Length: 219
Image 1 (cartoon, rainbow, N blue to C red):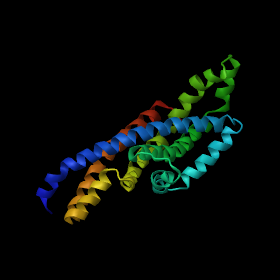
Image 2 (image 1 turned 180 degrees about the vertical axis):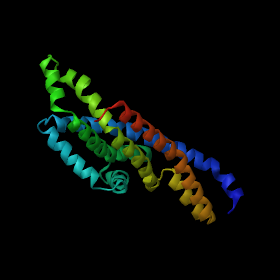
Image 3 (image 1 turned 45 degrees about the horizontal axis):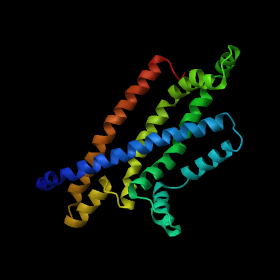
């Protein structure tokens, strides 16, 4: 194990980690919005919108992120549409993550008891007020465990961003292996980098889940 090699190339992994986190944060935030929007359309059985969202969820969940990135980065230019590498990564992660977030939100929405909705209607709440004050708070509390699992899943999925020429963690590792044949060192730093990113998120997610469970939400 070449310790000098590891120390020398730590800055490259740090830069790649920040890039990975930035793109993952944007993609996850947008996927949350998309997932919530789709889940509400399905939950309230909005005509046309419900069918479109269901089709999108099936398409997204049954195609790998790598294929989606290839379509965006290599396929669209064939018809004159050019998108930057970072935009492809964000769009691809949002497209994939939105379907998983929608399913997580939908499970939370379905867990809201009918009596809660009927009580809200009986006191004169409008549909928007019902969603804001009755349905969403309970649904979000129930959805926290699957949402946290989706956060971790999507961050790990960023490992395919290197396929569209983004200098993420996987790209740096493969580049160092190709240039210096330091496979063990490059992969060790890759594993450590992902652990540094994912372990705190995993611990925080577990803490939040316990707090929600102890508070009595989602039951």
